[in-house]
Image (cartoon, rainbow, N blue to C red; front, side, top):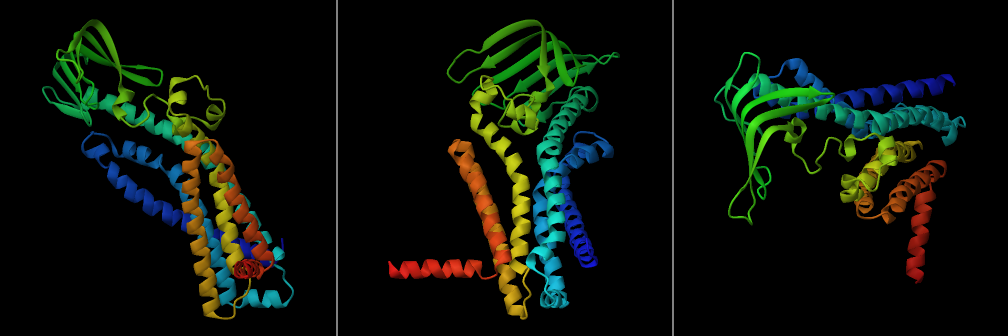
Length: 376
């Protein structure tokens, strides 16, 4: 790598790391403030708060890294042009392909970062977040909720116990689950305690009953029990029940998913969408970088020319991301959307590459299409 290439690479890498750090920090801080009740209402330590909110960083990096790359490439090329370095290099015979080499290394590094985050780090962080919230709810039951207090562990889930014994057992438990208005359940038990089995936390009730009321039944159904266990993970709510939702499963688990599994069969489109989004995320980072390079890789002698190229790059990247959301919806509805989802970024990547090698490619293409329309 030449001195010029090392200089371009250092500049673009520094701009990328700065943009990634600043954007991730700002978004993380805004999202963290929404979880401040972990300390204020749920009685957890500052370390637990940092752990839970810090686990959202992989998902933020996955979204922000392509944007940071886009900004870094635009910043570097605009700086080279403003300092007349790009003009001098072009006049000395530097081709767009030679200029692309240091950016290509950055593209590879960022694509690898987004791929590792999307395929491994993000689903692992979602699984750990679920585990942390389960522990927080178990901790609320055992330490935070006071005797005689009616506490709402989750929206529509009320918990109460009369007194706590020296060994930690709770006596006189009352639990009402109204999260599903169509199926209201009320639990009453003489004794209750929390236990941990592997990575799961359970609330075990002894000598009690369950009263379940359905809207189409006049009398409730009452079930007597000697021992009954409630999985504390279910207090999290959400559209997808169960310990492992689509976003929490590893990429290998999504690839090897059992079509006969009840959750997979019920949410087949969601599992298909999640799997392909993980593979598409790195591609979008590469496309964003290529759009920025194609827009400003040629020297511009006027501010107006640079402004139009910059505006065009922003519009193209924004349109690309919006179209990506649309193709994600197509994957959710059917397998036919998979081809469109991969073909669109591949087409944009090819057009950006041709535009970078031939600055008049897109203008010539548009002028030809207009002539054909007029002739027709």
